[in-house]
Length: 310
Image: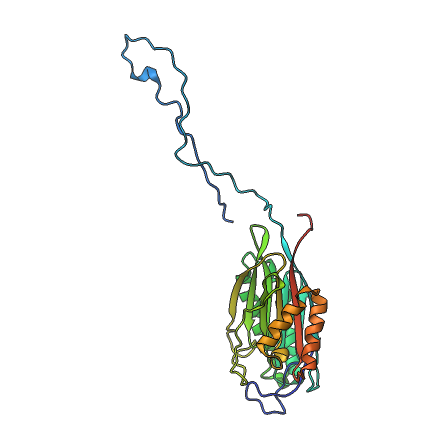
């Protein structure tokens, strides 16, 4: 995990001196069919007592009226996917500590952008990503429930920390978390939890990106939703089917403030052939070259086939 911070815009109505910016997981689907009484009635049961039982002629079992369905295998024959990912963060031109933080773990990616004063913003973003990571939502039986629980816990943690240090009062952060869920023992779905104004894109086949998240902020205005802002966290929870070769990108708003959507789309497509490490480096560099004043954090994750024996 990496963390960091930028310094001074008013997102929640703080005065300019106090406000800060950010820089750096079935049902048993079984069918059944039966032949029934393939040989019909017992002939002796339908004859009079003085009748002799004629020899039985060969009979053919009738075609079942219910089709036979094979049992679903206990172990999926589809290849499991995993996330091969890397993250980078860079302090913005405003200076001060990097208030962004990120984590890259097995099946979990997260980016947070702190608000509420330089030290407080850095603490909020760090608390958020570490709390989510320790909750391990990627291993939940239902990743959606896991993400809700993880973000609820992160929200409580960020709200309670200022009780220990009054100068951190009002701290908060944005938070985007991506986990690779398990369905039929196969990673087939990405689950995305979104709070704030950072961005998550999905690039099918590492081609044209599609923005998954909508900023919780007024354009060029204040942030409307964040971890730690309210007693109950409001989040967007999204699901996206994925396959090997797809890419997911998470970014704090340091880059989205200095590059137009069409510029970012083109850049993401150009970087599609690069490894996650090189792509993350290139995106952070591009933000800096464009004059990013806010901290910029990028996490790039590729969906690849998991060759680990199961």
